[in-house]
Structures are given as C-alpha cells and as structure tokens.
Length: 178
Image (cartoon, rainbow, N blue to C red; front, side, top):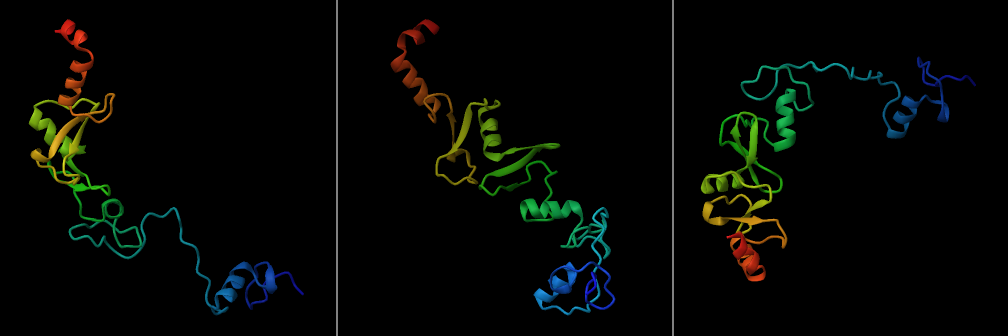
C-alpha cells in the first residue's frame, strides 16, 4: 500500500481510510470524490470579483459576501442599515440598548437625551450628572420626560432632594458656607 491518497490523480499524503484529509472529509460528508478541488481564497486580496457595491449610488468595488463595500458592510453590521449616514448634524441612530445617538459636530456624537438637557440648562452637564427618563422609555427624549440625577453618594438622587438632605443633615456646614 502506498503512502498517497487512494483517489485517482491525487498525490497528497494519505491518512485515515487511505484518503488524504480533503477526500476523507468529502467521504464523510457524502460528497463526490472526483469533484474538482477548490483552491482557498487569497486572504490578502481586498477586492472580490463581481462588480460594484449593491448600495445605490456607491461605485466602490464590493469586498464582502453580501455584495457591499467595506464602509457599507460595517454600517450594516453595526447598525443594521448599510445606508446609515451620521455626518448631518442632529441625525443619528438608536443603539441596541434603546438610546438615541446623534451627531452634534463634525466627528462628534453624543447621547441625544444628554444633548437636550444641556441645551435646556444652558450649560454642559458635569461628569457626575446623569439624565434620567421618567417614564423609562430610553428614546423618549422630550424635555418633560427628562430629569437630572447625580451619582454622588447617596447614589441616584435628584439635585433638589440631595440639597434638602444635605441641609437636613449638615445644617451648620451649609450656614457656614453661605
């Protein structure tokens, strides 16, 4: 018995059942043994032959199995929409968690509810301030549904409640500070 595959015209080394690895896998899968060998794709090649991206108005060559160029494929994979464009101010998308993210300046995005609260207050929010949705619906960003909470101890209080708590428990310090 020779040390090569038992399939005719195959000169690869044999392993199990007298076949090379490729023919052994074909035998187990029930595929014909005489089918032509498919050469592996060149992994360094960016362009896969077949034409332009399938997204309307895009003439870049496609480079993915879905027929999209890299840019549109990444948008589809991340947001579910290959045509999503975040360059226009105020435009954006909803995250998987349900929050809206909008474009506020070139190459700058932020959570829409924080942006709305900053505009309402006329100042930037502090890092320890959170914007809470009163009704729990994360994309309902009406100003009447939003309120500012702080994350200072005790956690998760409205600023008004926190001030009342401080005045109640540290009255002497408040009077000295004023």
